[in-house]
Image (cartoon, rainbow, N blue to C red):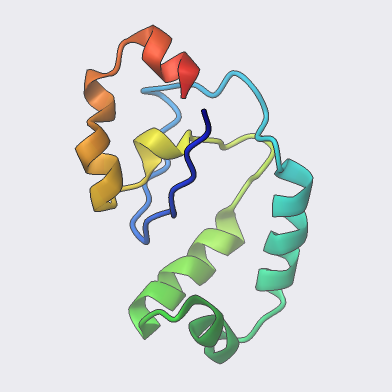
Length: 100
């Protein structure tokens, strides 16, 4: 079974609580997308993301410091959206974390 959920706007990079053991499936596509986003002006990013100026500025900061090869935090522990909170990843057993 595969479940796809949207990322949240709030994200925390935390490589110490749960280490990623594999590379993301769509790493090459993510690099292409990141390169595209880095070339955009703030107004265009606001339009693409449908986000506030504050969120856009945070996104721009994240794009500048993003390291897709090394600094990886699994979404289940990095996003702060309500769907992630309700999954309660801090209660997952190791087999459950491996499964997801």
